[in-house]
Amino acid sequence: MIGAFIVACEVAFWVFVISGLAVRYLAGRRLLGVVLLAMTPVVDLVLIVATVADLRAGASVGFFHGLAAVYVGVSVAFGHRMIRWADERFAHRFAGGPPPTRPPKYGRKHARYERGGWYRHLLAWCIGSALLAGMAWFVGDPDATGALLGKAALWGVVVAVDFLWSFSYTLWPRRVKSS
Image (cartoon, rainbow, N blue to C red; front, side, top):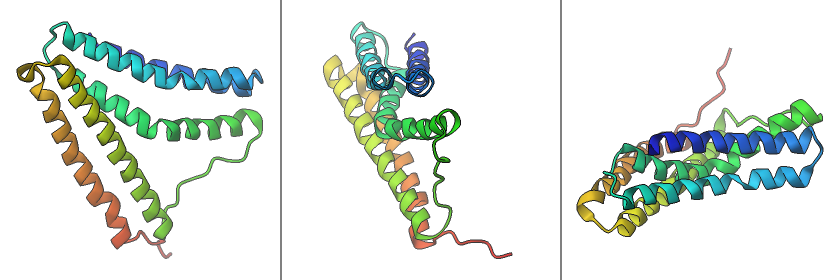
């Protein structure tokens, strides 16, 4: 059940983003657009409450309980960037805004961009791990919730690999291919 709820929350996130941008740019109702965009963190809160309630009700800790914390961590760390990405494209397409900015592809600027992505990933991991630990503490049954902390450790390995990848551009910057 919690897996379907995660999917519903992801859909709700994008419904709020798209409807907020549509109301802002197509209907010209800027304040209502901001309100709709501001609902995206509420989706995260609802997901965490539902996940904890599911665990409190005696559900066995599963993949989707950990995924809920990962989803919220990523949403908090990357959500603003995703909304800005969509906003730039929507403004360009429907409101005559400037073309969307593209991330740098080469040199120091590219290395800085990649490091910034890793810092966001680290932030997502910190938030997600704190949520996993908080869920484990709130449920209060170490036998039932020990797997939650294992998910944080596994995600930590992914963050470490991402660190190596992202910071490799600092040591070996990508160069423009000569023709």
